Image 1 (spheres, one colour):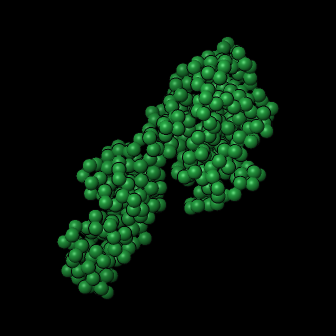
Image 2 (cartoon, one colour):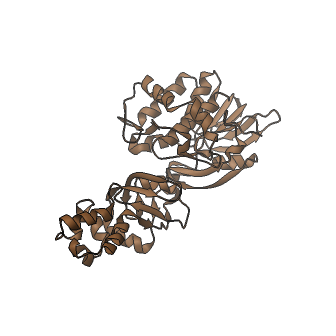
Image 3 (tube, one colour):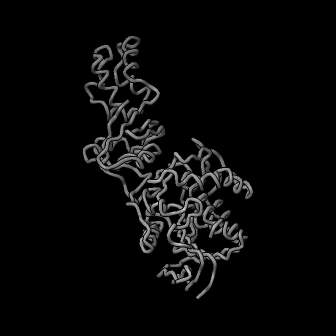
Length: 393
């Protein structure tokens, strides 16, 4: 039995950040990671460039049954703190859009930063370490049986993530630990995930696969203005991923394919100025031609605008300015960037990330019922929650 002060299960963004902070406090820290390398999700994130935070972090960018929970950690370890760490390691980065910060080079830069900080602060990382059993003794200390050996610790931190991207090793491990110690877990589902479509609509839109359109996507809760991407399975792209976290089965989503243009007024103007022009020509000036071909029936597309009634203009305009989509579902955890739901934040201290009724047991990162928007918000939650736990373990 190896004795240490802190065991962290999971060498992802939150786990490594917690390890660094605990190490800075001269705590003896061991990280156990089941995969063959640390930070696998860090490496594949942001198309291999790691969207590591966002200039515009705000608690309103997070979903949780307890919307106040994330405020404490996010205010104590901010995006500016992590940006300072990136600058300290001289990692070049840039803003892509909407405050999203990416490495100029590769995601490896962020992972190497974390691993170097771990090394400098005496953190020991064991890879290929499967957890076989966790027990709590009478002193509120923990015994962990693993393939890397048996450990005894004062503080146990669960940083094993959620269910998104199972090919990266995602598992319900954190939820099982919570249940073992009587901590409530909210039902989970895939977030930041592409939509699938019903067979008829999927077939109709198949010809558009690969086309991206700047759109305003909304439901009765929220709206997002970014690109949508037509795929061979359905709809993806940043605006779709964002709205997916706010979507429930059976609900409609409204897509405005021309958010800058009131199409009805555009048609009226065209009728006055270019009456002999075909409807499809007018639309092809402002939308990809393939989109026009799929959304308009042939007879209508060939008509001159002078021949079309205002009533018809209104109907056609709504097809583009207010396209109602009824998703069949989502692609699920296979391609989801995050997991919605998870460990009930009401049972966790927002200051320390320790379970209120289980001394010495901490949960951080994606395992908790805190889910950020697309664009670096989930990484910032990992840094902030990991930092908060690292001050207390």
